Length: 78
Image 1 (spheres, rainbow, N blue to C red):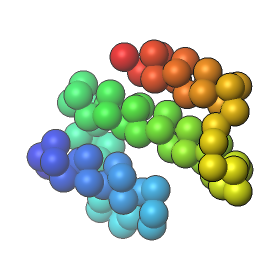
Image 2: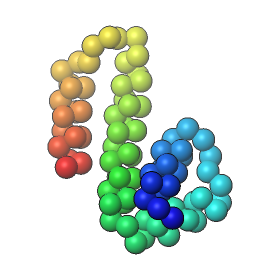
Image 3: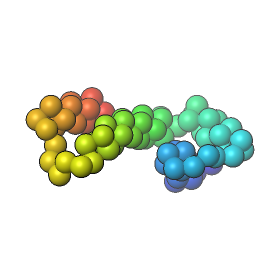
Image 4: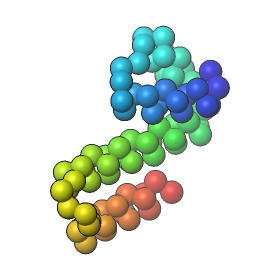
């Protein structure tokens, strides 16, 4: 599996179910590819941030606490 295909499947998991074959192929790829493991980790962090922001969808601005949490999460992923 290419890294491009792995990143596609990582993102696809956020919006729909992936097939058993995709799960197994991705799992194997992640075992051997450090960059895609990092990408998956970053994707999880971003997903959590977006989920948190979704709670505030009626507000057009982030609170100071949310801004600080976002900055901290981005620092951790570097």
